Image (cartoon, rainbow, N blue to C red):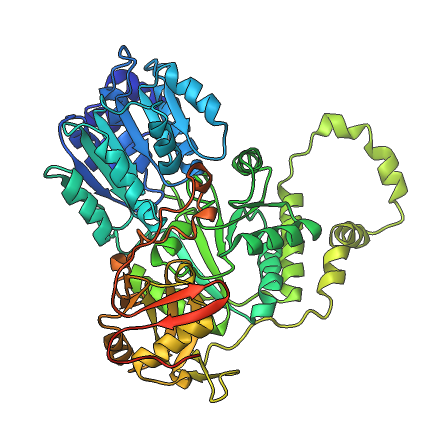
Length: 596
Protein backbone atom coordinates (compact mmCIF):
# COMPACT_ATOMS: atom_id res chain seq x y z
CA UNK A 1 0.00 0.00 0.00
CA UNK A 2 1.28 3.46 -0.90
CA UNK A 3 1.68 6.28 1.60
CA UNK A 4 0.14 9.74 1.13
CA UNK A 5 3.63 11.00 0.17
CA UNK A 6 3.61 8.81 -2.93
CA UNK A 7 0.27 10.10 -4.28
CA UNK A 8 1.59 13.48 -5.45
CA UNK A 9 0.17 15.63 -2.64
CA UNK A 10 2.21 18.59 -1.40
CA UNK A 11 4.35 18.18 1.69
CA UNK A 12 2.27 20.71 3.62
CA UNK A 13 -0.95 18.83 3.02
CA UNK A 14 0.65 15.46 3.81
CA UNK A 15 1.84 16.90 7.13
CA UNK A 16 -1.72 18.05 7.96
CA UNK A 17 -3.01 14.57 7.16
CA UNK A 18 -0.41 12.96 9.41
CA UNK A 19 -1.27 15.30 12.26
CA UNK A 20 -4.86 14.15 11.91
CA UNK A 21 -3.69 10.58 12.50
CA UNK A 22 -3.98 9.17 8.95
CA UNK A 23 -0.99 7.09 7.87
CA UNK A 24 -2.07 5.32 4.69
CA UNK A 25 -4.72 6.06 2.06
CA UNK A 26 -7.77 3.86 1.54
CA UNK A 27 -8.03 2.02 -1.82
CA UNK A 28 -10.34 4.66 -3.37
CA UNK A 29 -7.99 7.43 -2.22
CA UNK A 30 -4.95 5.61 -3.55
CA UNK A 31 -6.54 5.22 -6.99
CA UNK A 32 -8.39 8.54 -7.31
CA UNK A 33 -6.00 11.15 -5.87
CA UNK A 34 -3.16 10.79 -8.45
CA UNK A 35 -5.70 10.95 -11.30
CA UNK A 36 -7.55 14.00 -9.95
CA UNK A 37 -4.35 15.91 -9.15
CA UNK A 38 -3.76 16.18 -12.90
CA UNK A 39 -6.61 18.70 -12.90
CA UNK A 40 -7.69 17.94 -16.45
CA UNK A 41 -9.82 14.82 -16.32
CA UNK A 42 -13.37 13.73 -15.55
CA UNK A 43 -13.75 10.80 -13.18
CA UNK A 44 -16.38 8.32 -12.02
CA UNK A 45 -15.52 6.76 -8.67
CA UNK A 46 -17.53 3.77 -7.45
CA UNK A 47 -17.06 2.94 -3.79
CA UNK A 48 -19.26 2.04 -0.85
CA UNK A 49 -20.08 4.37 2.02
CA UNK A 50 -17.31 4.65 4.59
CA UNK A 51 -14.39 4.05 2.21
CA UNK A 52 -12.97 7.58 2.34
CA UNK A 53 -14.56 9.18 -0.72
CA UNK A 54 -14.53 12.70 0.81
CA UNK A 55 -10.75 12.70 1.13
CA UNK A 56 -10.45 11.07 -2.31
CA UNK A 57 -11.89 14.17 -3.98
CA UNK A 58 -11.32 16.72 -1.20
CA UNK A 59 -7.52 16.48 -1.00
CA UNK A 60 -6.93 17.00 -4.76
CA UNK A 61 -9.50 19.81 -4.73
CA UNK A 62 -7.60 21.69 -2.04
CA UNK A 63 -4.39 21.39 -4.06
CA UNK A 64 -6.00 22.66 -7.26
CA UNK A 65 -8.12 25.58 -5.98
CA UNK A 66 -6.29 28.93 -5.98
CA UNK A 67 -6.75 30.68 -2.62
CA UNK A 68 -5.71 34.01 -4.15
CA UNK A 69 -8.73 34.09 -6.47
CA UNK A 70 -11.98 34.97 -4.70
CA UNK A 71 -14.36 33.64 -7.36
CA UNK A 72 -16.04 30.25 -6.90
CA UNK A 73 -13.79 27.63 -8.48
CA UNK A 74 -15.20 24.39 -7.06
CA UNK A 75 -18.73 23.17 -6.41
CA UNK A 76 -19.58 20.05 -4.40
CA UNK A 77 -23.20 18.87 -4.58
CA UNK A 78 -24.48 16.41 -1.96
CA UNK A 79 -27.98 15.00 -1.31
CA UNK A 80 -28.53 16.07 2.32
CA UNK A 81 -27.74 18.80 4.80
CA UNK A 82 -25.86 16.44 7.10
CA UNK A 83 -23.58 15.19 4.33
CA UNK A 84 -22.94 18.75 3.13
CA UNK A 85 -21.93 19.84 6.61
CA UNK A 86 -19.76 16.74 7.04
CA UNK A 87 -17.93 17.41 3.76
CA UNK A 88 -17.33 21.03 4.75
CA UNK A 89 -15.99 20.03 8.16
CA UNK A 90 -13.60 17.55 6.56
CA UNK A 91 -12.35 20.07 3.99
CA UNK A 92 -11.79 22.69 6.68
CA UNK A 93 -9.81 20.20 8.75
CA UNK A 94 -7.69 19.24 5.73
CA UNK A 95 -7.09 22.91 4.83
CA UNK A 96 -6.21 24.01 8.38
CA UNK A 97 -2.73 25.49 8.32
CA UNK A 98 -2.42 24.67 4.64
CA UNK A 99 -4.57 27.08 2.64
CA UNK A 100 -6.62 30.13 3.49
CA UNK A 101 -9.78 29.10 1.67
CA UNK A 102 -13.34 30.27 2.16
CA UNK A 103 -15.50 27.12 2.10
CA UNK A 104 -19.24 27.87 2.33
CA UNK A 105 -22.03 25.38 2.92
CA UNK A 106 -25.54 26.14 1.60
CA UNK A 107 -28.50 23.92 2.48
CA UNK A 108 -32.15 24.11 3.36
CA UNK A 109 -33.44 24.50 6.88
CA UNK A 110 -30.92 27.20 7.81
CA UNK A 111 -31.00 30.97 7.40
CA UNK A 112 -30.70 31.79 3.71
CA UNK A 113 -29.68 35.39 4.48
CA UNK A 114 -26.65 34.16 6.47
CA UNK A 115 -25.67 31.87 3.61
CA UNK A 116 -26.07 34.69 1.08
CA UNK A 117 -23.81 36.88 3.20
CA UNK A 118 -21.11 34.22 3.35
CA UNK A 119 -21.24 33.57 -0.39
CA UNK A 120 -20.97 37.28 -1.20
CA UNK A 121 -17.81 37.55 0.87
CA UNK A 122 -16.19 35.28 -1.66
CA UNK A 123 -16.29 31.49 -1.64
CA UNK A 124 -13.68 29.54 -3.57
CA UNK A 125 -15.50 26.30 -2.66
CA UNK A 126 -19.26 25.89 -2.26
CA UNK A 127 -20.76 22.73 -0.77
CA UNK A 128 -24.50 22.60 -1.47
CA UNK A 129 -27.69 20.60 -1.49
CA UNK A 130 -29.46 20.83 -4.85
CA UNK A 131 -32.62 22.69 -3.77
CA UNK A 132 -30.92 25.53 -1.88
CA UNK A 133 -28.32 25.92 -4.63
CA UNK A 134 -31.07 26.32 -7.25
CA UNK A 135 -32.68 28.93 -5.01
CA UNK A 136 -29.44 30.91 -4.75
CA UNK A 137 -28.85 30.61 -8.49
CA UNK A 138 -32.32 32.02 -9.18
CA UNK A 139 -31.52 34.96 -6.86
CA UNK A 140 -28.25 35.45 -8.78
CA UNK A 141 -26.28 35.12 -5.55
CA UNK A 142 -24.14 32.20 -6.72
CA UNK A 143 -22.08 32.58 -9.90
CA UNK A 144 -20.92 29.30 -11.42
CA UNK A 145 -19.48 30.75 -14.65
CA UNK A 146 -15.91 30.45 -13.34
CA UNK A 147 -16.29 26.94 -12.00
CA UNK A 148 -13.39 24.61 -12.76
CA UNK A 149 -14.44 21.55 -10.78
CA UNK A 150 -17.86 20.04 -10.00
CA UNK A 151 -18.09 17.12 -7.57
CA UNK A 152 -21.30 15.09 -7.41
CA UNK A 153 -21.12 13.08 -4.19
CA UNK A 154 -23.48 10.13 -3.66
CA UNK A 155 -24.94 10.74 -7.10
CA UNK A 156 -27.12 7.64 -6.96
CA UNK A 157 -28.81 8.90 -3.81
CA UNK A 158 -29.46 12.35 -5.29
CA UNK A 159 -31.23 10.74 -8.23
CA UNK A 160 -33.09 8.39 -5.91
CA UNK A 161 -34.36 11.45 -4.02
CA UNK A 162 -35.73 13.01 -7.20
CA UNK A 163 -33.02 15.61 -7.89
CA UNK A 164 -32.46 14.67 -11.55
CA UNK A 165 -33.94 17.91 -12.91
CA UNK A 166 -32.03 19.97 -10.35
CA UNK A 167 -28.73 18.35 -11.30
CA UNK A 168 -29.42 19.03 -14.97
CA UNK A 169 -30.25 22.65 -14.20
CA UNK A 170 -27.14 23.15 -12.05
CA UNK A 171 -24.75 21.58 -14.55
CA UNK A 172 -26.26 23.60 -17.39
CA UNK A 173 -25.13 26.82 -15.69
CA UNK A 174 -21.48 25.71 -15.49
CA UNK A 175 -18.86 26.16 -18.27
CA UNK A 176 -18.14 23.30 -20.68
CA UNK A 177 -14.46 23.43 -19.73
CA UNK A 178 -15.04 22.24 -16.17
CA UNK A 179 -14.05 18.84 -14.84
CA UNK A 180 -16.78 16.68 -13.31
CA UNK A 181 -15.91 14.20 -10.57
CA UNK A 182 -18.79 11.85 -9.84
CA UNK A 183 -18.75 9.55 -6.80
CA UNK A 184 -21.43 6.95 -6.20
CA UNK A 185 -22.00 3.70 -4.35
CA UNK A 186 -23.87 2.23 -7.35
CA UNK A 187 -24.05 2.93 -11.07
CA UNK A 188 -27.71 2.89 -12.18
CA UNK A 189 -28.73 3.97 -15.66
CA UNK A 190 -29.52 7.53 -14.56
CA UNK A 191 -26.01 8.02 -13.17
CA UNK A 192 -24.54 6.74 -16.43
CA UNK A 193 -26.75 9.23 -18.26
CA UNK A 194 -25.13 12.06 -16.29
CA UNK A 195 -21.71 10.68 -17.17
CA UNK A 196 -22.54 10.53 -20.87
CA UNK A 197 -24.26 13.95 -20.99
CA UNK A 198 -21.90 16.07 -18.89
CA UNK A 199 -18.54 14.27 -18.79
CA UNK A 200 -15.81 13.95 -21.39
CA UNK A 201 -14.27 10.47 -21.60
CA UNK A 202 -14.33 9.99 -17.82
CA UNK A 203 -11.95 7.59 -16.17
CA UNK A 204 -13.82 5.03 -14.09
CA UNK A 205 -12.48 3.70 -10.80
CA UNK A 206 -14.35 0.88 -9.11
CA UNK A 207 -13.25 -0.81 -5.94
CA UNK A 208 -12.82 -4.58 -5.99
CA UNK A 209 -15.64 -6.28 -4.13
CA UNK A 210 -17.87 -3.26 -4.76
CA UNK A 211 -20.93 -5.44 -5.13
CA UNK A 212 -20.07 -7.53 -2.08
CA UNK A 213 -20.04 -4.58 0.31
CA UNK A 214 -17.84 -4.07 3.33
CA UNK A 215 -16.29 -7.37 4.41
CA UNK A 216 -15.92 -6.10 7.99
CA UNK A 217 -19.69 -5.92 8.52
CA UNK A 218 -21.36 -8.93 10.14
CA UNK A 219 -24.89 -9.07 8.70
CA UNK A 220 -27.40 -10.56 11.14
CA UNK A 221 -31.15 -10.86 11.52
CA UNK A 222 -33.50 -11.77 14.36
CA UNK A 223 -36.97 -13.12 13.58
CA UNK A 224 -39.81 -11.89 15.80
CA UNK A 225 -43.46 -10.92 15.63
CA UNK A 226 -44.15 -7.36 14.45
CA UNK A 227 -45.58 -6.48 17.85
CA UNK A 228 -42.35 -7.61 19.59
CA UNK A 229 -39.85 -5.57 17.59
CA UNK A 230 -39.43 -2.85 20.21
CA UNK A 231 -39.02 -5.42 23.00
CA UNK A 232 -36.38 -7.19 20.92
CA UNK A 233 -34.55 -3.91 20.35
CA UNK A 234 -34.41 -3.29 24.11
CA UNK A 235 -33.07 -6.78 24.77
CA UNK A 236 -30.27 -6.44 22.24
CA UNK A 237 -29.32 -3.05 23.69
CA UNK A 238 -29.40 -4.40 27.27
CA UNK A 239 -27.43 -7.48 26.24
CA UNK A 240 -24.64 -5.50 24.51
CA UNK A 241 -22.43 -3.53 26.91
CA UNK A 242 -20.97 -0.43 25.30
CA UNK A 243 -23.33 -0.48 22.32
CA UNK A 244 -23.10 2.69 20.22
CA UNK A 245 -25.69 2.39 17.49
CA UNK A 246 -27.83 3.93 14.79
CA UNK A 247 -31.38 2.53 14.81
CA UNK A 248 -33.06 2.90 11.41
CA UNK A 249 -36.82 3.25 10.89
CA UNK A 250 -38.73 3.64 7.65
CA UNK A 251 -40.87 6.68 8.57
CA UNK A 252 -40.50 9.87 10.57
CA UNK A 253 -43.44 8.83 12.75
CA UNK A 254 -41.85 5.50 13.68
CA UNK A 255 -38.51 7.21 14.31
CA UNK A 256 -40.05 9.71 16.71
CA UNK A 257 -42.17 7.08 18.45
CA UNK A 258 -39.34 4.60 19.04
CA UNK A 259 -36.99 7.34 20.25
CA UNK A 260 -39.63 8.61 22.69
CA UNK A 261 -40.20 5.07 24.02
CA UNK A 262 -36.46 4.54 24.50
CA UNK A 263 -36.07 7.84 26.35
CA UNK A 264 -39.09 7.04 28.54
CA UNK A 265 -37.57 3.63 29.36
CA UNK A 266 -34.33 5.24 30.50
CA UNK A 267 -32.13 4.83 27.44
CA UNK A 268 -29.81 7.55 26.15
CA UNK A 269 -31.50 8.07 22.77
CA UNK A 270 -32.67 10.82 20.40
CA UNK A 271 -34.46 10.93 17.02
CA UNK A 272 -33.11 12.35 13.75
CA UNK A 273 -35.62 12.97 10.96
CA UNK A 274 -36.80 15.60 8.50
CA UNK A 275 -39.37 17.23 10.78
CA UNK A 276 -36.71 18.46 13.19
CA UNK A 277 -35.44 22.01 12.87
CA UNK A 278 -31.86 22.48 11.78
CA UNK A 279 -30.91 23.55 15.30
CA UNK A 280 -32.42 20.33 16.70
CA UNK A 281 -30.62 18.21 14.12
CA UNK A 282 -27.32 19.93 14.86
CA UNK A 283 -27.78 19.35 18.59
CA UNK A 284 -28.55 15.67 18.13
CA UNK A 285 -25.61 15.11 15.78
CA UNK A 286 -23.22 16.95 18.09
CA UNK A 287 -24.28 14.73 20.99
CA UNK A 288 -23.88 11.61 18.89
CA UNK A 289 -20.45 12.57 17.60
CA UNK A 290 -19.33 13.37 21.13
CA UNK A 291 -20.68 9.97 22.20
CA UNK A 292 -22.85 11.56 24.88
CA UNK A 293 -25.73 9.96 22.96
CA UNK A 294 -25.79 6.16 22.83
CA UNK A 295 -28.65 5.45 20.40
CA UNK A 296 -29.46 7.59 17.36
CA UNK A 297 -32.89 6.69 15.93
CA UNK A 298 -33.03 7.91 12.32
CA UNK A 299 -34.74 7.77 8.96
CA UNK A 300 -32.67 6.73 5.94
CA UNK A 301 -32.31 10.19 4.45
CA UNK A 302 -31.75 12.07 7.70
CA UNK A 303 -28.86 9.74 8.52
CA UNK A 304 -27.07 10.49 5.23
CA UNK A 305 -23.75 12.14 5.91
CA UNK A 306 -23.28 10.62 9.37
CA UNK A 307 -19.55 10.05 9.58
CA UNK A 308 -19.04 8.99 13.18
CA UNK A 309 -16.27 6.62 14.19
CA UNK A 310 -16.68 3.52 16.34
CA UNK A 311 -20.38 2.89 15.67
CA UNK A 312 -20.72 -0.70 16.86
CA UNK A 313 -24.17 -1.54 15.50
CA UNK A 314 -26.62 -0.55 12.82
CA UNK A 315 -30.07 -1.84 13.78
CA UNK A 316 -32.88 -2.03 11.21
CA UNK A 317 -36.37 -1.84 12.69
CA UNK A 318 -37.70 -2.23 9.13
CA UNK A 319 -35.94 -3.56 6.06
CA UNK A 320 -35.72 -0.79 3.42
CA UNK A 321 -37.36 -1.19 0.03
CA UNK A 322 -34.32 -0.01 -1.91
CA UNK A 323 -31.22 -2.21 -1.93
CA UNK A 324 -29.00 0.87 -1.91
CA UNK A 325 -30.62 2.06 1.32
CA UNK A 326 -29.50 -1.11 3.09
CA UNK A 327 -25.96 -0.61 1.82
CA UNK A 328 -25.88 2.98 3.03
CA UNK A 329 -27.46 2.06 6.36
CA UNK A 330 -25.02 -0.74 7.13
CA UNK A 331 -22.13 1.43 5.94
CA UNK A 332 -22.52 3.61 9.04
CA UNK A 333 -20.58 0.93 10.95
CA UNK A 334 -17.26 -0.83 10.20
CA UNK A 335 -15.68 2.37 8.94
CA UNK A 336 -11.95 2.90 8.42
CA UNK A 337 -11.18 -0.83 8.58
CA UNK A 338 -13.00 -1.51 11.85
CA UNK A 339 -15.60 -4.23 12.39
CA UNK A 340 -19.29 -3.73 13.02
CA UNK A 341 -22.69 -5.45 13.13
CA UNK A 342 -25.70 -4.77 10.94
CA UNK A 343 -28.72 -6.31 12.71
CA UNK A 344 -32.18 -6.50 11.11
CA UNK A 345 -35.11 -7.14 13.44
CA UNK A 346 -37.64 -8.65 11.04
CA UNK A 347 -40.98 -10.42 10.96
CA UNK A 348 -41.76 -13.36 8.70
CA UNK A 349 -43.27 -11.14 6.03
CA UNK A 350 -39.93 -9.33 5.70
CA UNK A 351 -37.84 -12.45 5.16
CA UNK A 352 -38.06 -11.97 1.40
CA UNK A 353 -36.16 -8.70 1.77
CA UNK A 354 -33.40 -10.51 3.64
CA UNK A 355 -32.96 -12.96 0.75
CA UNK A 356 -32.97 -10.15 -1.82
CA UNK A 357 -30.33 -8.17 0.05
CA UNK A 358 -28.21 -11.34 0.38
CA UNK A 359 -28.39 -11.74 -3.37
CA UNK A 360 -27.53 -8.10 -3.99
CA UNK A 361 -24.52 -7.82 -1.65
CA UNK A 362 -23.47 -11.46 -2.12
CA UNK A 363 -23.23 -11.94 1.63
CA UNK A 364 -25.19 -14.32 3.86
CA UNK A 365 -27.09 -13.09 6.90
CA UNK A 366 -26.68 -15.00 10.16
CA UNK A 367 -29.83 -15.60 12.16
CA UNK A 368 -29.26 -14.65 15.79
CA UNK A 369 -31.67 -15.31 18.67
CA UNK A 370 -33.18 -12.52 20.72
CA UNK A 371 -31.52 -12.87 24.14
CA UNK A 372 -33.71 -14.29 26.89
CA UNK A 373 -34.30 -12.35 30.08
CA UNK A 374 -31.89 -14.60 32.00
CA UNK A 375 -29.20 -14.10 29.34
CA UNK A 376 -29.57 -10.31 29.53
CA UNK A 377 -29.21 -10.34 33.33
CA UNK A 378 -26.24 -12.70 33.20
CA UNK A 379 -24.51 -10.50 30.61
CA UNK A 380 -25.11 -7.41 32.73
CA UNK A 381 -23.66 -9.18 35.77
CA UNK A 382 -20.53 -10.22 33.89
CA UNK A 383 -20.10 -6.70 32.52
CA UNK A 384 -20.20 -5.33 36.06
CA UNK A 385 -17.67 -7.95 37.20
CA UNK A 386 -15.37 -6.96 34.34
CA UNK A 387 -15.65 -3.30 35.29
CA UNK A 388 -14.80 -4.13 38.91
CA UNK A 389 -11.76 -6.11 37.76
CA UNK A 390 -10.41 -3.38 35.45
CA UNK A 391 -11.36 -0.20 37.35
CA UNK A 392 -8.43 2.05 38.26
CA UNK A 393 -8.27 2.66 42.01
CA UNK A 394 -6.86 5.96 43.24
CA UNK A 395 -5.32 4.59 46.40
CA UNK A 396 -4.26 7.89 48.00
CA UNK A 397 -7.57 9.68 47.43
CA UNK A 398 -9.84 6.84 48.52
CA UNK A 399 -7.87 5.52 51.53
CA UNK A 400 -9.12 8.21 53.90
CA UNK A 401 -12.76 7.24 53.25
CA UNK A 402 -12.42 3.48 53.58
CA UNK A 403 -12.18 2.93 57.38
CA UNK A 404 -15.78 3.96 57.95
CA UNK A 405 -16.89 1.84 55.00
CA UNK A 406 -15.02 -1.18 56.40
CA UNK A 407 -16.66 -0.63 59.78
CA UNK A 408 -20.12 -0.38 58.22
CA UNK A 409 -19.68 -3.64 56.29
CA UNK A 410 -17.68 -5.64 58.87
CA UNK A 411 -20.57 -8.03 59.57
CA UNK A 412 -20.90 -9.10 55.93
CA UNK A 413 -18.97 -11.85 54.22
CA UNK A 414 -17.29 -11.27 50.83
CA UNK A 415 -20.15 -13.14 49.12
CA UNK A 416 -22.78 -10.99 50.85
CA UNK A 417 -21.04 -7.78 49.80
CA UNK A 418 -20.86 -8.95 46.16
CA UNK A 419 -24.55 -9.89 46.18
CA UNK A 420 -25.61 -6.55 47.63
CA UNK A 421 -23.51 -4.46 45.24
CA UNK A 422 -24.82 -6.53 42.32
CA UNK A 423 -28.39 -6.01 43.54
CA UNK A 424 -27.91 -2.23 43.63
CA UNK A 425 -27.02 -2.38 39.94
CA UNK A 426 -29.45 -5.08 38.82
CA UNK A 427 -32.64 -5.00 40.85
CA UNK A 428 -34.31 -3.06 38.03
CA UNK A 429 -33.20 -5.58 35.38
CA UNK A 430 -34.08 -8.56 37.51
CA UNK A 431 -37.56 -7.16 38.14
CA UNK A 432 -38.11 -6.26 34.48
CA UNK A 433 -36.91 -9.56 33.06
CA UNK A 434 -38.47 -11.85 35.65
CA UNK A 435 -40.55 -14.42 33.72
CA UNK A 436 -39.73 -12.66 30.42
CA UNK A 437 -41.19 -14.60 27.51
CA UNK A 438 -39.30 -15.91 24.48
CA UNK A 439 -39.52 -13.42 21.58
CA UNK A 440 -37.97 -15.64 18.91
CA UNK A 441 -39.99 -16.97 16.00
CA UNK A 442 -39.24 -20.03 13.90
CA UNK A 443 -37.71 -19.49 10.44
CA UNK A 444 -39.06 -22.72 8.98
CA UNK A 445 -41.72 -21.03 6.83
CA UNK A 446 -39.67 -18.60 4.72
CA UNK A 447 -42.80 -17.68 2.77
CA UNK A 448 -44.66 -14.51 1.84
CA UNK A 449 -48.24 -13.55 2.62
CA UNK A 450 -51.03 -13.61 0.08
CA UNK A 451 -54.70 -12.74 0.27
CA UNK A 452 -57.25 -15.51 0.82
CA UNK A 453 -60.50 -15.77 -1.09
CA UNK A 454 -62.14 -13.08 1.05
CA UNK A 455 -59.24 -10.68 0.48
CA UNK A 456 -58.91 -10.25 4.24
CA UNK A 457 -56.46 -12.56 6.01
CA UNK A 458 -53.35 -13.51 4.04
CA UNK A 459 -52.58 -17.11 3.26
CA UNK A 460 -48.97 -18.29 2.81
CA UNK A 461 -47.36 -18.99 -0.54
CA UNK A 462 -43.93 -18.52 -2.13
CA UNK A 463 -43.88 -15.46 -4.42
CA UNK A 464 -42.01 -12.67 -6.19
CA UNK A 465 -41.82 -8.93 -5.50
CA UNK A 466 -42.39 -6.43 -8.31
CA UNK A 467 -41.55 -2.74 -8.60
CA UNK A 468 -44.10 -0.48 -10.37
CA UNK A 469 -43.45 3.20 -11.09
CA UNK A 470 -46.84 4.57 -9.96
CA UNK A 471 -48.05 5.41 -6.49
CA UNK A 472 -49.80 7.95 -4.28
CA UNK A 473 -48.89 10.94 -6.45
CA UNK A 474 -50.92 9.31 -9.24
CA UNK A 475 -54.00 9.33 -7.00
CA UNK A 476 -53.82 5.64 -6.16
CA UNK A 477 -54.57 3.86 -2.94
CA UNK A 478 -53.91 0.18 -2.22
CA UNK A 479 -57.37 -0.86 -3.35
CA UNK A 480 -57.18 0.91 -6.71
CA UNK A 481 -53.66 -0.37 -7.34
CA UNK A 482 -54.85 -3.90 -6.54
CA UNK A 483 -57.64 -3.43 -9.06
CA UNK A 484 -55.18 -2.30 -11.76
CA UNK A 485 -52.94 -5.29 -11.13
CA UNK A 486 -55.86 -7.72 -11.33
CA UNK A 487 -57.31 -6.07 -14.47
CA UNK A 488 -54.16 -5.79 -16.56
CA UNK A 489 -52.44 -8.82 -15.09
CA UNK A 490 -55.58 -10.83 -15.82
CA UNK A 491 -55.52 -12.46 -12.42
CA UNK A 492 -57.48 -12.34 -9.17
CA UNK A 493 -56.59 -10.92 -5.80
CA UNK A 494 -55.78 -14.34 -4.30
CA UNK A 495 -52.57 -14.24 -6.37
CA UNK A 496 -51.53 -10.81 -5.09
CA UNK A 497 -49.71 -10.31 -1.79
CA UNK A 498 -48.52 -7.31 0.20
CA UNK A 499 -48.81 -3.93 -1.53
CA UNK A 500 -46.33 -1.27 -0.39
CA UNK A 501 -47.58 2.07 -1.75
CA UNK A 502 -45.04 4.93 -2.03
CA UNK A 503 -45.15 8.43 -3.46
CA UNK A 504 -44.11 7.94 -7.08
CA UNK A 505 -43.66 4.18 -7.09
CA UNK A 506 -44.85 1.04 -5.29
CA UNK A 507 -44.01 -2.60 -4.67
CA UNK A 508 -46.32 -5.61 -4.65
CA UNK A 509 -45.95 -9.35 -4.22
CA UNK A 510 -47.31 -11.95 -6.63
CA UNK A 511 -47.53 -15.70 -6.55
CA UNK A 512 -44.50 -17.49 -7.98
CA UNK A 513 -44.75 -17.87 -11.74
CA UNK A 514 -47.22 -15.00 -12.20
CA UNK A 515 -44.68 -12.19 -12.62
CA UNK A 516 -44.18 -12.47 -16.41
CA UNK A 517 -47.92 -12.56 -17.09
CA UNK A 518 -48.60 -9.47 -14.98
CA UNK A 519 -45.66 -7.51 -16.37
CA UNK A 520 -46.68 -8.28 -19.96
CA UNK A 521 -50.25 -7.23 -19.18
CA UNK A 522 -49.07 -3.68 -18.40
CA UNK A 523 -47.27 -3.27 -21.73
CA UNK A 524 -48.30 0.10 -23.21
CA UNK A 525 -50.46 1.15 -20.25
CA UNK A 526 -50.30 4.77 -19.07
CA UNK A 527 -51.60 6.39 -15.89
CA UNK A 528 -51.99 10.16 -15.98
CA UNK A 529 -49.73 10.31 -18.99
CA UNK A 530 -46.99 8.27 -17.31
CA UNK A 531 -45.99 5.05 -19.00
CA UNK A 532 -46.36 2.27 -16.47
CA UNK A 533 -43.18 0.24 -15.98
CA UNK A 534 -42.74 -2.93 -13.92
CA UNK A 535 -39.52 -4.66 -12.88
CA UNK A 536 -38.59 -7.52 -10.61
CA UNK A 537 -37.57 -6.00 -7.29
CA UNK A 538 -34.02 -6.95 -6.31
CA UNK A 539 -32.87 -8.34 -9.66
CA UNK A 540 -31.88 -5.05 -11.24
CA UNK A 541 -32.66 -2.28 -8.74
CA UNK A 542 -30.24 0.03 -10.51
CA UNK A 543 -32.64 0.37 -13.42
CA UNK A 544 -35.57 1.84 -11.52
CA UNK A 545 -36.80 5.23 -12.47
CA UNK A 546 -36.04 7.53 -9.55
CA UNK A 547 -36.12 10.96 -11.09
CA UNK A 548 -39.88 11.17 -10.81
CA UNK A 549 -40.07 10.47 -7.09
CA UNK A 550 -40.45 14.05 -5.96
CA UNK A 551 -43.57 13.41 -3.94
CA UNK A 552 -41.65 12.01 -0.96
CA UNK A 553 -39.03 14.77 -0.68
CA UNK A 554 -40.52 16.26 2.46
CA UNK A 555 -38.32 13.87 4.45
CA UNK A 556 -35.28 14.23 2.24
CA UNK A 557 -33.49 17.18 3.67
CA UNK A 558 -34.02 19.85 1.03
CA UNK A 559 -37.72 20.21 0.37
CA UNK A 560 -38.21 23.54 2.07
CA UNK A 561 -36.00 25.37 -0.43
CA UNK A 562 -38.16 24.84 -3.46
CA UNK A 563 -41.57 26.27 -4.07
CA UNK A 564 -44.38 24.07 -5.21
CA UNK A 565 -44.51 21.12 -7.54
CA UNK A 566 -42.93 21.08 -10.96
CA UNK A 567 -46.10 19.55 -12.27
CA UNK A 568 -46.83 16.23 -13.89
CA UNK A 569 -46.66 15.03 -17.42
CA UNK A 570 -49.66 14.76 -19.66
CA UNK A 571 -50.36 12.41 -22.47
CA UNK A 572 -52.85 10.11 -24.09
CA UNK A 573 -53.42 6.40 -24.00
CA UNK A 574 -55.03 4.51 -21.20
CA UNK A 575 -55.10 6.75 -18.19
CA UNK A 576 -56.91 7.49 -14.96
CA UNK A 577 -58.07 10.86 -13.70
CA UNK A 578 -59.29 11.79 -10.25
CA UNK A 579 -61.39 14.70 -9.03
CA UNK A 580 -61.38 15.34 -5.29
CA UNK A 581 -62.44 12.26 -3.38
CA UNK A 582 -64.53 11.04 -6.25
CA UNK A 583 -62.73 8.61 -8.53
CA UNK A 584 -63.41 8.78 -12.25
CA UNK A 585 -62.11 6.25 -14.76
CA UNK A 586 -61.47 7.52 -18.27
CA UNK A 587 -59.57 4.77 -19.97
CA UNK A 588 -58.90 4.36 -23.67
CA UNK A 589 -57.78 1.26 -25.51
CA UNK A 590 -59.52 -2.00 -26.24
CA UNK A 591 -59.92 -3.25 -22.68
CA UNK A 592 -61.82 -1.17 -20.17
CA UNK A 593 -60.98 -2.23 -16.63
CA UNK A 594 -63.48 -3.13 -13.99
CA UNK A 595 -64.72 -0.49 -11.59
CA UNK A 596 -63.59 -1.01 -8.03
